[in-house]
Length: 126
Image 1 (cartoon, rainbow, N blue to C red):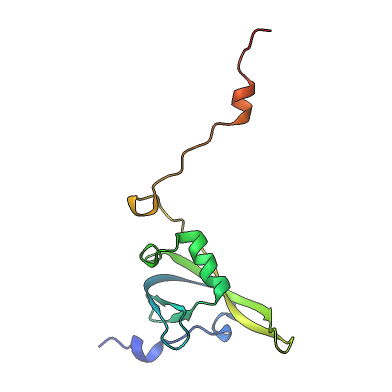
Image 2: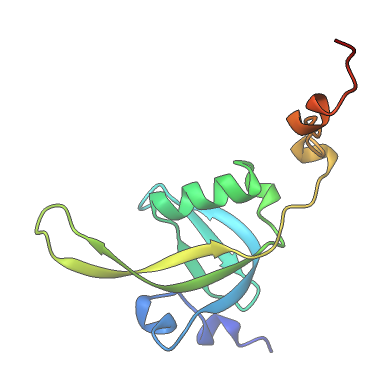
């Protein structure tokens, strides 16, 4: 019997207080309560994405949730200042670890731009 249901849950700042952890994304959903993305990790834990963590995922792995599957991210302890009270609070900060591999789904590889140095090295008669 798989007991992950009873041993996993949301990742909180206390879960990363002793140091960063790396997790592999198994699924992505949208929270009905908060209308925000939720990452589901292979170990059964979840992370509700804050706007900064959502932007980080979009920049690293595109804005298509299917491109997030299988990616490895690091979760660590972070801090922010709450706007209403000005108090500093703890949060979980997400950092992309795996590199998005080029594929037909994400536009393939970017074309290499010619170096300006190469253009200046041409022999030109004066």
